Amino acid sequence: SPPLLSVRHLTKTFKVREGFRRRRVNAVDDVSFHINAGETYALVGESGSGKSTTGRTLLRLIDATSGRADFAGRDIFSLSAAALRELRKDIQMIFQDPLSSLDPKRTIGYSVAEPLLIHGIGDRAERQDRVGRLLTRVGFSPADAKRYPHEFSGGQRQRIGIAKALILNPRLIVCDEPVSALDVSIQSQILNLLLQLQRENNFAYLFIAHDLGVVRHIADRIGVMYRGRLVEEAPTDTLFAAARHPYTQYLLASIPPSHPGLRIAPARPPAANAGADRTSGRGCVFSGKCPHAAAHCFEQVPVERILGDRHHVACHLFS
Ligand code: SF4
Ligand code: MG
Image (cartoon, rainbow, N blue to C red; front, top):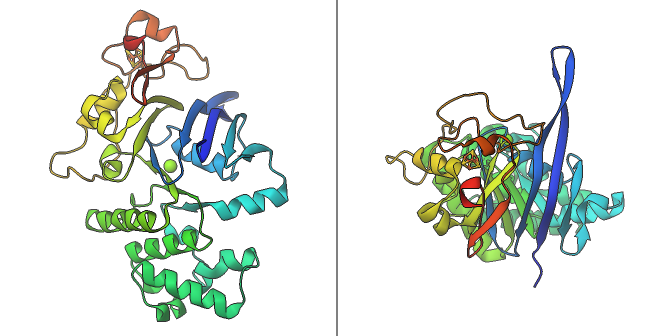
């Protein structure tokens, strides 16, 4: 069966000011990947790698510059306003800061029910019932619906944000660093909850994270992004056992052994050399920091190669 989501050659260009000059930066640069129904696909990379921008274009929160994204037979980037409303039932988002989806002046019951109100689903009693059941599933009681966001901790608020993302029974949930702002002890609770909810409902996740440790236990496949490019993609076990791209290897080496499952600090490549200019389209995006860079790495963009079962890498070492 065709994938639930298929992204082809997605590019998002921003104009940035540099002194008196303006230049174009490809925040997302020719990115292709797919997500199957019920699958968890992680996009991993440091901040500025384009992973959040990728997620936001799929929700049409920002417009793609070029490329295509097909979701369950619909071309996301050319939907009418009415069709986009329908799409929003199927694709939901969980944010790093749960307060961005919770109104501080409204009860959490109202906020969780809000998507039902927007889409005109159910009467008051039905909505109340659905909210109560969802709050229970994420660890609260139906009576908590009357409380306000400030009465909850960060981890609790994230669970409320998850309930809100689930209320329309989406088929894909984009999770943008949903545990990055939480204490390490709370992170695994939230990750386990996300896993458990997926087992019960079989929706897919696009899980955006800045480190591999966080996604190790939840992702089926992982795509690694660097400066707008998808540089390596593989099933999770393959990536951890046999990463090939020098940047992926760097990310793996920076997961501290004391927290094998989780870490918070963003990974930074070791050196800050000149680097290839990503606006020129020439060269490998990692050439400025790569210990294996050769002359042609600064001249030619590496083509994606298939190394094995669902394992792709874009690096001249393998071309
Ligand atoms: Fe390093 Fe060259 Fe591979 Fe880029 S293409 S990751 S610079 S070896
Ligand atoms: Mg981000």
